Picture (cartoon, rainbow, N blue to C red):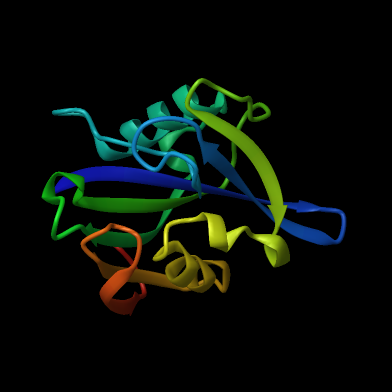
Length: 162
């Protein structure tokens, strides 16, 4: 099970609440909208990994103190166990800069009412709605053998994380 990070950015734009997503241009998850994040290097502290991944993928600068853990999600691919990930999801409270397109990701702000769920991983269509409602959660998602659908899901709401 690979540990990973995922950071979500929210902003108010006039009357609209928005979320920053990025189109994955290469590698794992190519062609899907997602937040920013990725692998944790051996010995790297969790929050520093989240900050590093965000900087590499978006150009945005964040600090560990600006991250609020909102979910822990276990993604399991029974037919491709090397894809299994335990993801620490954070809401970013403050950041510096504007997102830029990188070799890996193309950023776009979306109104919360216009999130492109059909172009995201199937579990994102489930857990992200809860997070937007302000809930914190622990979840497990078990993918179908083709990696596109879900065979099972377990969601527990949490008050806090350690």
